[in-house]
Length: 85
Image (tube, rainbow, N blue to C red; front, top):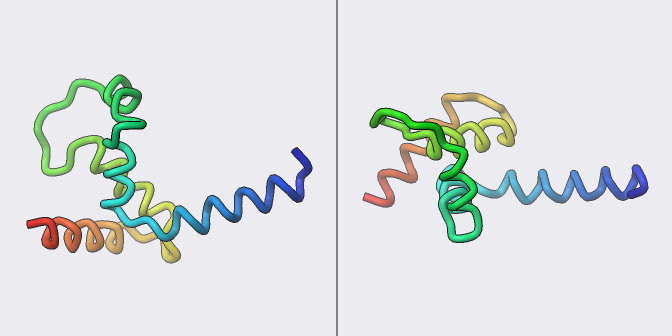
């Protein structure tokens, strides 16, 4: 792949990823296309406030957000939980 084409592809992926919130990442990670692969990679863990898939979803949201803050990722997750009930 040509470097310019690679850069354009990366920009499109980042632009699309920036539009997805924590709930979107969680749904993607636990959806039918990725659930088996993600479940196979998740180590044994104790019950926590944020299981590994939620933590990964929040981290992905944080890493791709404009400000990159943990606070914003947690706030977004709290809003999504409140909406979901």
